[in-house]
Image 1 (cartoon, rainbow, N blue to C red):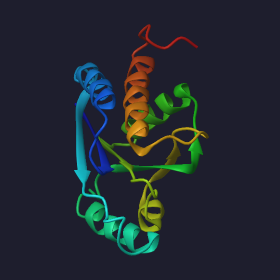
Image 2: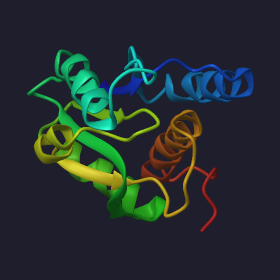
Image 3: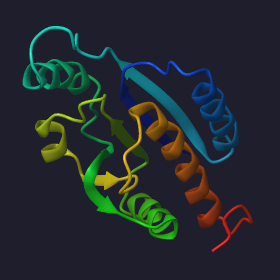
Length: 157
């Protein structure tokens, strides 16, 4: 069974986002082992953006798995349709990866080191969302990808 993990900076605080994510976690159980890991966000009251991103990089780097296919979610990354995203998923598995790790940064994005070392940099949307909302959207798109791969009726092109 595939393992998919989403590594995030900061916790989910909004109840409606937590509930939405839980509904997709439940649906995803039939396709994969789906897991969340959270790292503490930097103290945005002290220092600068460069310092905050370095602080978050230290925490994120402890969780990175060199055997996983790593996808950094970043607004300037590659933009894919849902069908293309599903095809990418399939291709990753066909290339021998049983584990996919997604990384979602905090309010200030992701450190450059994460972007450079990831196997792929993905844009969830050209629009700007909160990092918490991006988690919910990514959860839905992962679920949608599995339904597309399995020719199920959830996705209507």
